[in-house]
Length: 227
Image (cartoon, rainbow, N blue to C red; front, side, top):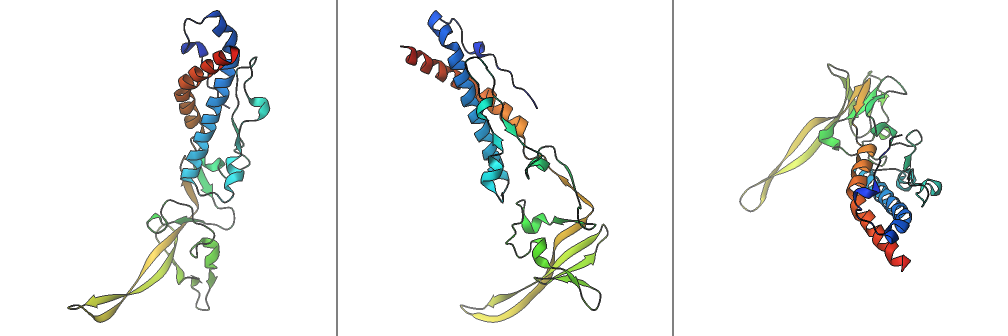
């Protein structure tokens, strides 16, 4: 758990007696709105960086319980995230992903897959390749994939092919075949995980940025409601 402490009087000077009486309500209102802003900011960061299998469920784990909201007598809001109960935990502090079944972690080739997670519907997803050993002893899978042994460990390769047209003056004159291979995965014992969630930084940055406008707005509303 971490704390962000904000002094409401840093944005309020020379309060009248009426404003002093409305201060508890204004502060609680501002704190709750700032918390909402911080919660939304973290959810947007997650949506922008991860493709989630159960998006609504995961985003809702970043929550503010009703009992954790600020009141006129309790100037505190708690934004909680259950890092031990959802798939985002590994992205808050980074570290390493270790193989849980078998010996290897399949590390995707970014030149092929980019930085986004590989979806289960992708024909090249690990579980869809269904590797098996051939009678000749080679490991082969679907989509013309096969395994070779590299210097640092096994590599998953894919045979590629295509046809390229050669054009003459205004017309196709011949066709030539283009063949080759590309690497899809490197099999490693562990893979490092980047820090992407940035929960603490996002919440802190948003809270400080939004405090002044939200507190000013809340005091204006409190004064209007008192008339």
